[in-house]
Image (tube, rainbow, N blue to C red; front, top):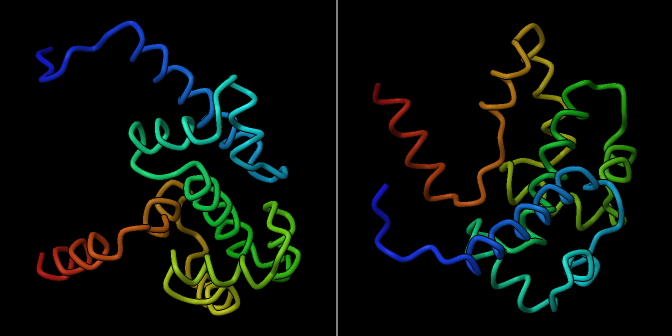
Length: 152
């Protein structure tokens, strides 16, 4: 492979640490996590971790954590056996207001509206449902994706 920038041993070590942080977020999303705790886990300062994580994955550790929590919340809401409040706390959010606001930002509708709409997805394979309902942080990309899909 021909890279336009040299990949040094130091850069590879940084990327390995960032993958460890991302894996911890994926595994422990429902636990109380903050950037300081994540940084301590890999022996970095919070500021350095935030900069390196964003450089590696395109978003801050907190944004990545909230996206994982919202994805899991979408799954739980589709099941339909938990209330929005129960889902909020099950995915590690401590404020229903913050959860609802972030959910609405990423998904485009409120958690309660999503819960009502999701009943039409019964019977679809989980892999298809997950792909179709994955939250999109960049609204412009989502709009472009939707317009491409409708013109096909």
